[in-house]
Length: 496
Image (cartoon, rainbow, N blue to C red; front, side, top):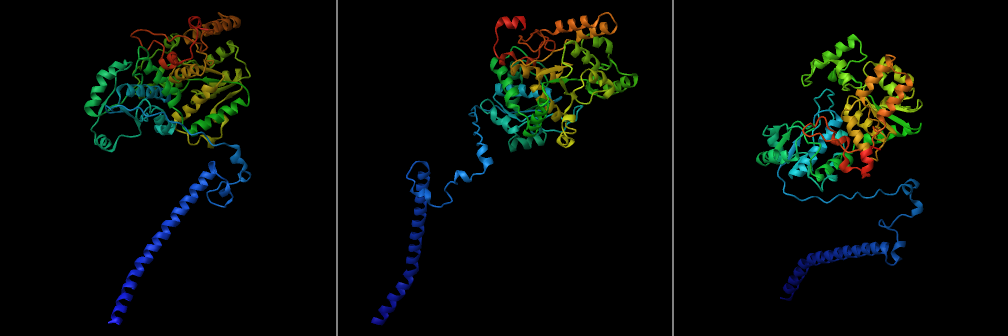
């Protein structure tokens, strides 16, 4: 009987032993974890303010001696953390997709308008699609030119911007279920509220397939005007690649003193579109005419070049530009950066300008071919480089009032009314013809040129408003005076 009892007890003991060992292991593991946690917490407290007893212990948590930190790390302090604006909370009325048309600066202005419209309608804006089918055939997407993440986050306190539609809506769009339209040009913001918003609420997604000049210059709420400026001057930041290359060009120019940027809009597309052929030979006139007829969206086909030039509607030629710069006493030794594509007629047409101003440079002459290899056949990215250099120049001179000329003019006003010479083409072609025909001597020509441009140097002025004639009034982006530094009314009236 005793033997049986002993065996039973031994059996129970052997069965209980594994459970006891398991309990003991769990207790030891838990204790170890707690001890390590306490140790780490004590060391963290010691780093901040507590007793320094633990700091002498070798540990993966302890800081390295400052004397052992590499020199280059000590020279460059950590960049401050970017503080994002708080998100604006609002009931989303739907989604707005936009396809911009035109060149870089036409699209730039359009993007500013579309953000303001999306904000006013309380809708979500999808990152705009850029034009890939125009004359320039640039395949660049938004994120190839602009910093998309900065664009989205910097505007989050005003409007929600997404890179693409939510999956369900994206699928519907891919299947062709989308309402597409072109809004009416120069429309008041109320048009978008009364006509476009109901469509967005009905279809959930509306696609605007044209965006050029779709919001009026004047008569808009002040908040709308200021938001257009904020997008233009802050949210639309170029990619780091474009920004860095632009800084390098500016640095190379600054090493050799002051520089003037000449936006010489004497390129083949402009001449074909405008029908301006001053100084062109017969073969060139035929080539430009054929090109104009080849593009159906260029509505005007039969053009009298001489009449158009007399009305001041043609870009100034390189020869005319050289005369004007000399008449304005622009220093012969100044660097002139040509912000343009290929000049039509090449060296033959540039000869007089190069003779008058031998320090002509371009991005292609300042940089190595390898620097620009990723920009080749991407006209908008090339234009972005020119835009950055134009902003930083000591003097900016456009020879035609196209989109780049106007947007850069307005941006330079915003930067403190930097000197921008706005040439009076209609007046200048008249006196150039008089000078060339001997009816005016050089001193008279120079004096008349200076007098005509005394108040056309980017001075503070009120934007000209012409009721019901938006194409003839001042462009909002050329003079966004709602967003500019305040000046005395007397200065505004005098234009000085």
